[in-house]
Structure formats: C-alpha cells, structure tokens
Image 1: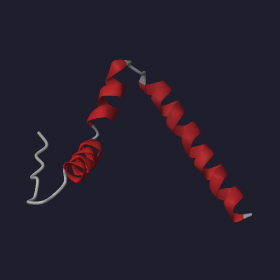
Image 2 (image 1 turned 90 degrees about the horizontal axis):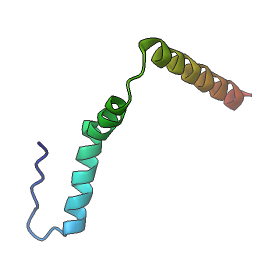
Image 3 (image 1 turned 180 degrees about the vertical axis):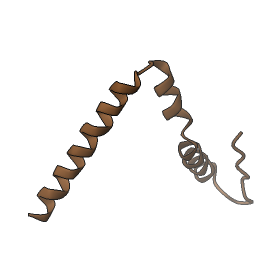
Amino acid sequence: MIIINVKDGESLDKALKRFKKKFEKTGVLRELRSRQAYEKKSVARRHEIKHAIYIQNMHKEESL
C-alpha cells in the first residue's frame, strides 16, 4: 500500500504527482499487463535477444 503524506500548504497537484511517481516505481501496472497474457519463456527470451541486438546497433550508430 502506498502512503503519501500531504504536507501543510502543499497543493493537491503536487501530492498527486508524488503519488503517481511512487506508484510507477512499484511496477504494479507493468506486472498487471504482463500477467494479462501468458508468454512462453522461449518467446520472452527471443524478445529479450531482439531488444539487446537493437540496443547494440543503436550504440554502434551513435559512435560512427
């Protein structure tokens, strides 16, 4: 459970922004989305490898 203490004189917008930031750090939404559709380990690994190759190629292009 996320607890946000609203300080004296703090606007509600700032408190809401702090809440959103904390909520995003917990990764609840990311986990929820990943649990909605099961992905086989082999498929997940293939995605990881493709992403790693993409990142490597991006770094190669930057250095040129």
